[in-house]
Length: 105
Image 1: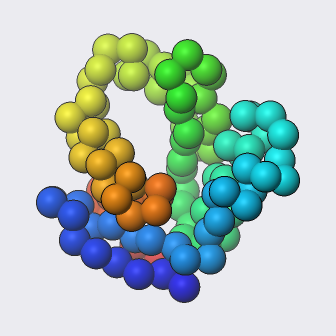
Image 2: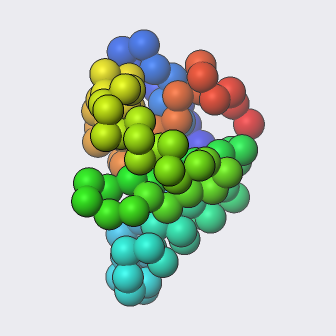
Image 3: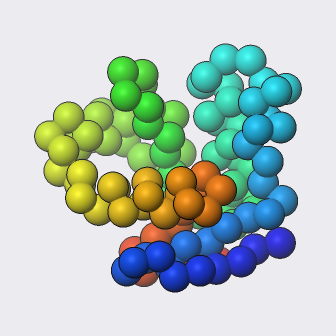
Protein backbone atom coordinates (compact mmCIF):
# COMPACT_ATOMS: atom_id res chain seq x y z
CA UNK A 1 0.00 0.00 0.00
CA UNK A 2 1.31 3.42 -0.91
CA UNK A 3 0.69 6.70 0.82
CA UNK A 4 1.80 10.24 0.21
CA UNK A 5 2.59 13.14 2.47
CA UNK A 6 3.91 16.61 1.90
CA UNK A 7 7.40 17.25 3.30
CA UNK A 8 8.71 20.75 2.70
CA UNK A 9 8.75 21.13 -1.08
CA UNK A 10 8.84 17.38 -1.74
CA UNK A 11 5.99 15.00 -2.28
CA UNK A 12 7.04 11.86 -0.44
CA UNK A 13 5.79 8.41 -1.40
CA UNK A 14 5.85 5.75 1.30
CA UNK A 15 5.46 2.02 0.87
CA UNK A 16 3.96 0.08 3.73
CA UNK A 17 4.72 -3.25 2.01
CA UNK A 18 8.43 -2.44 1.84
CA UNK A 19 10.35 -3.91 4.80
CA UNK A 20 14.04 -2.97 4.67
CA UNK A 21 14.69 -4.37 8.16
CA UNK A 22 13.26 -7.73 7.14
CA UNK A 23 15.49 -7.72 4.08
CA UNK A 24 18.52 -6.83 6.21
CA UNK A 25 17.86 -9.89 8.38
CA UNK A 26 17.75 -12.26 5.41
CA UNK A 27 20.43 -10.84 3.09
CA UNK A 28 24.13 -10.79 3.87
CA UNK A 29 26.44 -8.32 2.19
CA UNK A 30 25.86 -4.63 1.52
CA UNK A 31 25.82 -4.80 -2.28
CA UNK A 32 23.33 -7.69 -2.30
CA UNK A 33 21.12 -5.89 0.20
CA UNK A 34 21.19 -2.62 -1.75
CA UNK A 35 20.36 -4.41 -5.01
CA UNK A 36 17.45 -6.23 -3.39
CA UNK A 37 16.15 -2.97 -1.90
CA UNK A 38 16.18 -1.41 -5.37
CA UNK A 39 14.43 -4.47 -6.83
CA UNK A 40 11.73 -4.34 -4.13
CA UNK A 41 11.20 -0.61 -4.62
CA UNK A 42 10.92 -1.10 -8.36
CA UNK A 43 8.06 -3.52 -7.77
CA UNK A 44 6.42 -1.35 -5.09
CA UNK A 45 6.61 2.09 -6.70
CA UNK A 46 8.37 1.71 -10.04
CA UNK A 47 11.19 3.83 -11.45
CA UNK A 48 13.34 4.23 -14.55
CA UNK A 49 16.57 4.84 -12.64
CA UNK A 50 17.68 4.55 -9.03
CA UNK A 51 20.74 4.33 -6.85
CA UNK A 52 21.91 3.64 -3.32
CA UNK A 53 25.12 5.44 -2.39
CA UNK A 54 26.81 5.05 0.97
CA UNK A 55 29.83 7.13 1.84
CA UNK A 56 33.03 5.22 1.12
CA UNK A 57 31.38 2.39 -0.84
CA UNK A 58 30.72 2.07 -4.55
CA UNK A 59 27.09 2.91 -5.40
CA UNK A 60 24.55 0.29 -6.38
CA UNK A 61 22.75 1.61 -9.45
CA UNK A 62 20.02 0.82 -11.94
CA UNK A 63 20.22 2.85 -15.16
CA UNK A 64 22.52 5.41 -13.51
CA UNK A 65 26.13 5.87 -14.59
CA UNK A 66 28.08 5.03 -11.42
CA UNK A 67 31.15 7.02 -12.50
CA UNK A 68 29.11 10.19 -13.10
CA UNK A 69 27.23 9.62 -9.85
CA UNK A 70 30.50 9.32 -7.92
CA UNK A 71 31.73 12.57 -9.50
CA UNK A 72 28.51 14.40 -8.59
CA UNK A 73 28.69 13.14 -5.01
CA UNK A 74 32.39 14.03 -4.70
CA UNK A 75 31.69 17.58 -5.91
CA UNK A 76 28.64 17.89 -3.64
CA UNK A 77 26.83 19.13 -6.75
CA UNK A 78 23.41 18.13 -5.46
CA UNK A 79 24.01 18.25 -1.72
CA UNK A 80 21.17 20.65 -0.89
CA UNK A 81 18.56 18.80 -2.97
CA UNK A 82 19.66 15.41 -1.68
CA UNK A 83 19.65 16.68 1.92
CA UNK A 84 15.91 17.36 1.60
CA UNK A 85 15.33 13.83 0.29
CA UNK A 86 17.41 12.35 3.09
CA UNK A 87 15.38 14.26 5.69
CA UNK A 88 12.13 13.13 4.08
CA UNK A 89 13.32 9.52 3.99
CA UNK A 90 14.34 9.57 7.66
CA UNK A 91 10.92 10.84 8.75
CA UNK A 92 8.87 8.55 6.48
CA UNK A 93 10.27 5.09 7.03
CA UNK A 94 13.47 5.22 5.01
CA UNK A 95 12.26 5.83 1.46
CA UNK A 96 11.59 9.10 -0.35
CA UNK A 97 10.83 9.80 -3.98
CA UNK A 98 10.95 13.29 -5.42
CA UNK A 99 7.89 12.93 -7.64
CA UNK A 100 8.19 16.52 -8.90
CA UNK A 101 11.45 15.48 -10.58
CA UNK A 102 10.93 11.77 -11.15
CA UNK A 103 7.16 11.60 -11.70
CA UNK A 104 4.58 9.29 -10.19
CA UNK A 105 3.69 5.73 -11.11
